[in-house]
Length: 330
Image (cartoon, rainbow, N blue to C red; front, side, top):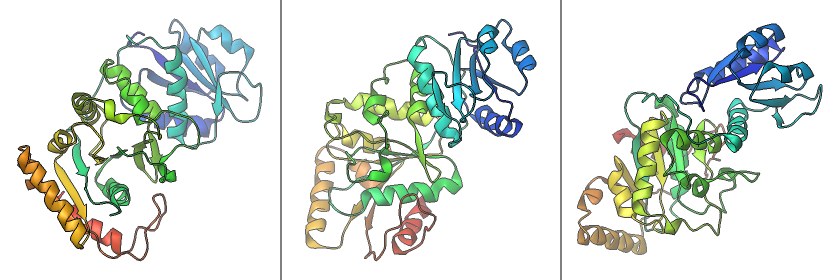
């Protein structure tokens, strides 16, 4: 695909075209330049000699648009006009619309297209959350910290667990997840970035990749591929923080922890928990990962009477106050 490929958003609804156009134009590292128009005459002029991707509402769709030279026409279904394919729901969050446009585009795109990447400043800080102690609110701690950090910049949450119990982090429909994304780790950065953008989802402003489904074997992915994955995410996607909700089943877990700028080790105030933490720290020392131990912050989770929902508006309570306190070192 040529570097100057174009996506045109054409909609006679000027308000929608303006709002959706602003969102598309704000996104970095897309595989096309973006243009917006609200009249068919302007559309024909922009299309001339470009062979663009055309995104238009079903009520604005005309048979004559097929003569404009579009490489592909994607229809935003608003309940009017014809029901052409491929089509996606028009009135949904902008990030979901973009994700589905990217999915359709990548079904036919060659993998040799080029994208001009912008570094976006400093690389994201990696925050690892890991503990050998079970049932210590690790996922809740990670997600809520991610939401609290949104005031400082964009945040991505990645779970390395099989989250069959975390329904809010699973997609209600069959779509890409962390395991699927890892298939593209050896692809060119441009391909990887577009695949990433087509899979990323958002909950209350926090970006995440749906966790791998049960039965997917993440344990077979080599440590070096995980490291390459994290380096790409931190350097290409414009995040300020990437939070890793880690699991000991991942190969190279200590090496991944070593990559992190800060590590939170969650625990409880009981004898079994203290023994597990002591054994874990002894293993770190045995395998020369004392640097991981030294940069780890041990957090003894307080008694919690209420756990805020991942996507709710109410970020108050003992656990939230505790997390805010731990964030002071970041």
